[in-house]
Image 1 (cartoon, rainbow, N blue to C red):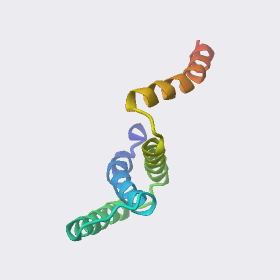
Image 2: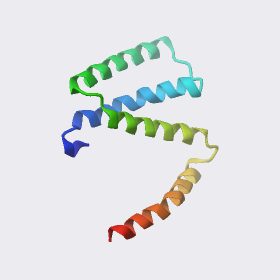
Image 3: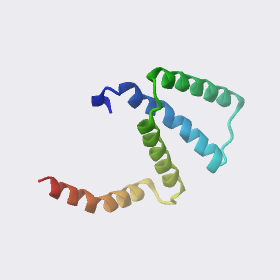
Image 4: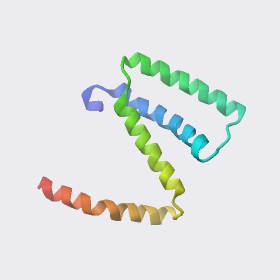
Length: 106
């Protein structure tokens, strides 16, 4: 995205993703926000809204990237495996596709 002069949209992902993580934690993991956390979340949402309006368009690609990483985090949180085991499993699952891709590039 940065090479296509969309640096602001790319950087918005770093602000949108934590908002999505908080919303997902509230909705699916039943987390509770304190009064100050709620106030901070409101300020963050206002800031991201202002930045989004300043870009002049809705950053669809950024929202999709943030949502996919948020979904990944939710799935990873729900899987009852140690982090090293889940990383090994993820690597094993992607290894075949990666090998096919590398072979096709040569």
